[in-house]
Amino acid sequence: MNVLQENKAQLLEERMLQFSFDVIAITKVIAASPENKIITGQLIRSATSIGANYTEANNAASRQDFRNKIFIAKKEAAETRYWLRLFAKLNDVPHTGTLINECSELLFILQKIVSTLKNGK
Image (cartoon, rainbow, N blue to C red):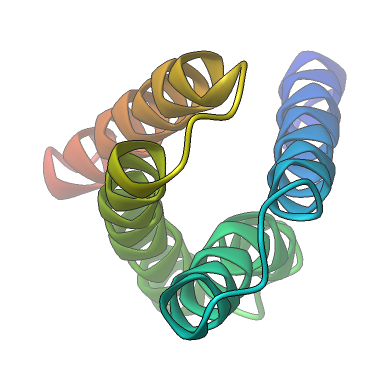
C-alpha cells in the first residue's frame, strides 16, 4: 500500500470510528423500552463491527483475508442501515436521517472496494 492509499485508509477508518461513536450517542437519548433495548443492541453491534472489520482488513495477512474482512464490513453496513431505519421509525430522534445517509455512503464505499477486488484490480 502506498502513502496515498494509507492516508485514504486512515481517513476512512476515522470516519467509521466517528460513525460508531455517533450511533452509540444517538442510542443514549431514547426511552429504555424492551424493543429499544433489542434494537439498540443490534444497532451498536453492527455499527461498531463495520470499522472493526475494515481495520482488520487493513492489517490482513493475505489478499484473501483482506477480501473476507471487507465483505464482512459491507454486510455489517447493510445490516446497520436496516437497524437505523427501524430505530428511526420507532423513535423520534434528531439526526437519525444523517446517520442513515452516512451508513449508505459507507456501504457504497465498501461495495466499490468489493467490486474492485472482484474485477482483479
